[in-house]
Length: 271
Image (cartoon, rainbow, N blue to C red; front, side):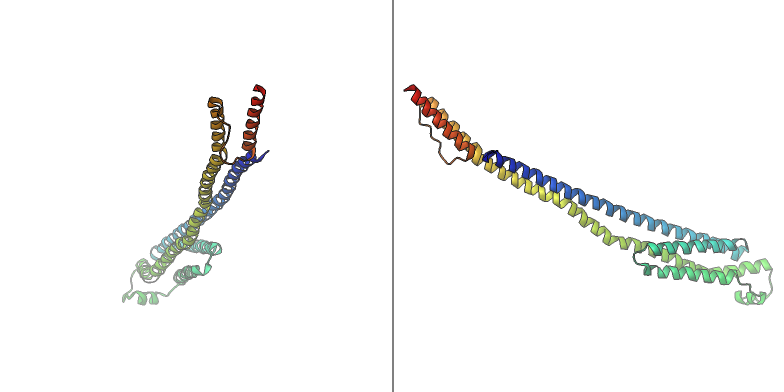
């Protein structure tokens, strides 16, 4: 392959190589972007499921405690313990999966406090005199009414505030989850720009290369061919001397020299 053909081949191969490299880089970055997106969405979905399960367990515990404290349904005691164990298990799972487990200390503390308050009331029998003094009743009343009054007073003054603190901590866990994902979402945005940047840069460079390639093709190929064609037409039409103005390169120079020799041989044959 001679000079002109080599230059044209190198020019087109350079464009192909640039496009291939930018495509590979973009595919790699898009793959990373897809993986990061999946990780963030999975983490968010998992944390939302944990928070939802915690709120569900807290609500079930509240209902079970309410039945025991006010309606004296002692069969619900085992439910209280089981639900609280489930809640502790979900908190432990959240701690194991959290990036910063110390932020769950308050949630763990509120759950432990709720357990302690429940255990002290439900699983500790109080004498009737103490029960009466606790609720401020001066005269004896029916046992069922006494249990309901004592349970309602305890539920409103002790259990409900602790339960609300637990719910607030679960909601704080949800808020912290979204806040902790914010930096990763910002990094995801940067990765998106980084995945698009190679394509954009390669597009700009490719446009520049194409324009340069057009310029060189125009200067070193099209115009010399036009000058050779114009000089040859003048010779054939008007018998003007064949002369190409400007410097020619490679095969075009050989072509002009060959035409000159061919014209010279033609003149010798006519003589």
